Amino acid sequence: MRQEFRKGLDDVVEKTKGDIIITSHIMPDDDAMCSALAQKRILEKQHPNKTFRVIFSEKPIDAWNALLKSPDEVTWAAKEKIKATDGKERPGDIIDHVKSGDALICLDGGTFNRFSRLQEQLENNPPFNTIILDHHRDTPSPAGLSYVEPEANATAELLSGMHDIDSLDPDVCELLWHGIISDTRNFSFEQDYTQVKAVAEKLQKRSGKSVEELSKRIKHSEQEKAYKEIFEKHTTKVQ
Image 1 (cartoon, rainbow, N blue to C red):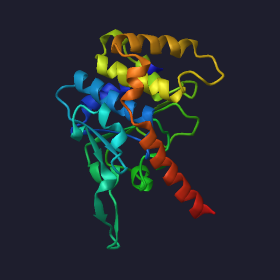
Image 2: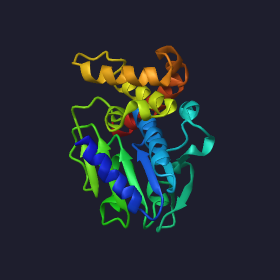
Image 3: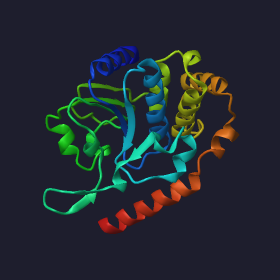
Image 4: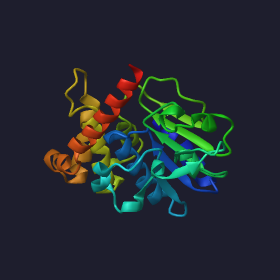
């Protein structure tokens, strides 16, 4: 099934006349960011004649800068202010960057409200192709192409399983390995990790990095502090 999805994705990319935009959920975690960057770099190598962009409906998160090849490898849409039809300003969104003829690849989430604060504009007959790849149990939003595997531990695991790891660049393997390590909390949950551990070991070997080297690249404390503040703010609002 993973290979069928990959073939379908390659077909969509080849037929897309506009940009191929890759996104993940608002407030991206390690798996979301690493999967989005890995997917971009994999597709760039396979389809050098196409334009790929990673865009999030979020304000800039500095914790991820160490993963980027360049500062402009990711666009943070919410840092922009957009004037709505009612004259009020709103934060920018992924929908502001997708145009007719584009393709939108949504990773690590099955429903459009995870990727956009204006999800109805993604759901109501969008003039572009939508693709969903996810490992959660939610029923996915209608998309032109979708694949959900709840048994997988991370979206990075799904991407790894679609490719020959030895053919992937070391930086891509590092990203995918990072995503798996993060979503499994370094295999600390009580479940059978036999298959995904074997994949992670191959990725680690190909990346040439240790767990210690990996952990130093991300400023987890800054990211977690920001997420905690947002959580507390919304909890107070609900109360």
